[in-house]
Image 1 (cartoon, rainbow, N blue to C red):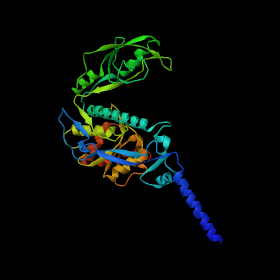
Image 2: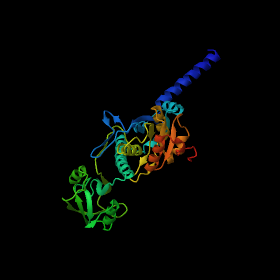
Image 3: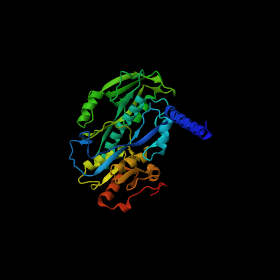
Image 4: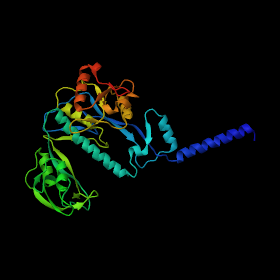
Length: 365
């Protein structure tokens, strides 16, 4: 066999072997790509994303789009060839698998965590939006969860309103742990609670639950740190003055909080906050309206621009990363609070965009 032909054959066989290895060998990476973007002011799957009743609302035009990132599932293992193609692509990014999914986390656990974060982001968005509008929101301390095989298991239930511990009023969820840990493990403590069903019925009417209180005696047990516990996680439940429902299926995580909050503000405010412009954005939000950073910012800006967004509300901590590869035609607007976002939308709606706080690669405006 001529040397040139032998060399060509060997090279071809090596290439085939590399391709086969690339397809068969799994690598510890996951892929992120732009996901769906949904207008919080509009409909999704045939129903309004934001449904508000018991209060005068308005029908604003324009877009306040929440954005998402599509990721490979926790049980999916990319092969070397897919990872290589992903690294070369502009509209996707490849990251270490453990960046998205902690070691040992199952698909069910990941879904549950995403659902819980999404639910919490909705609650915080409502509180932050009404706070921006100076509409009071009441709160109460509740049993957020009960640990299996602990003293409270079967005696306290998620949603029970905690009014007192050992006769001492509970004003914040932090009071519960303080009062329980005054005991030594093995001592009894008494919770005064309103059952979850009673509380839920009152909340539907926008009222604080009253009456039907019961006392539950529990024997404390010893935690790993040596302190007395009863096996519950206390949390905060808000009582809204009128119903606000957020309907959006197949979405998880906390990053839509800012855009949900702005959508609520816009629907409760005369006129159009966007001036009819296409604004998208992202960011977590807490009860006080502080906007927090999120992951996958570059994928979200790409997805938003592809749908027609002109402006993108960007958490200030994400500014530097987003500015490194901003899609052409998209203006990044830096925000740290819901108040910042409302002020920016006022400039956008009136066309005074020269003064918008922008993002730069160095994170400065």
